Length: 308
Image (cartoon, rainbow, N blue to C red; front, side, top):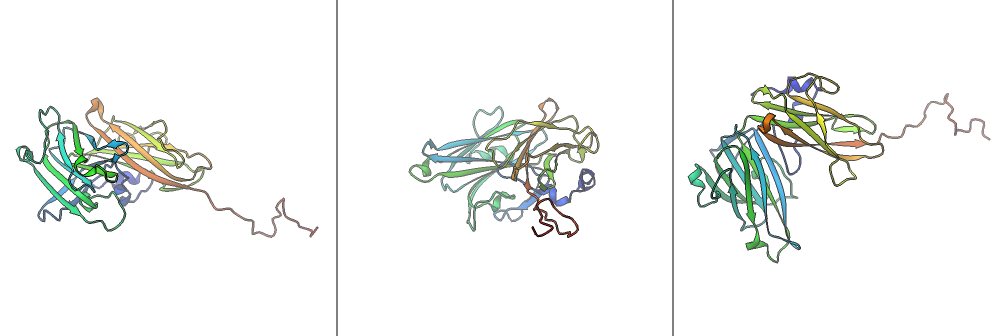
């Protein structure tokens, strides 16, 4: 496996484990592997994993939804894991140029398979990779890529949802595309007033991808929306250590007095729209502790030095 540590270390001495830090609901990961408990002999090395979340509700009535993922030409195999607490979710997948969707009845025509199973809940909801660890009912498709473009995953909870509580549907997609993307914020815990370096990395296998457009947005602790985007660059200037190394960097300065968790979203687009990735990261800003004078030789303005 290609070792990214040497290149990433040049951007600030990051530990290799930082590469695998994910974020909620939409993810891109460098590389991971898992073995399904349902397929004991199956092991898949993943280069591209993403996810989306949709809330189905009865008031207002939103009983169906969709998740759209753009797949690039490098992917040959696709796995989609749809997860919910609905035990009777209707699902189908529309692919680029398809006249009819992929569904459980015809997935074998696409050299694919379909599996349903349940993972018992042992704690609160968490979105973690691999997807099989997420509690709920799983509806899993695996099939050959039908070419580059947008894949639309549709789901309908009306058979089970009517008159019931709201239901969260998480859609996770994995491909074997060699295009790998990620996002890092350093430091992960920054003191108020310090700059935070944001670095997106982008590789095609072991080769750095240059000339991409990388825009990043930051959401501060007091906001519900992301702020206007700004660019991360791979030009060797400012926060970027070396031009053309596949690491796109920039600096973000949190506003004074605004402490807490900051969420970061980066969108990476290849030249000619050859590919598209969304990656997430987060960092925390904390207020430094108050510093009191402990040197008796130093008289502060508010000190009474003559007992009057």
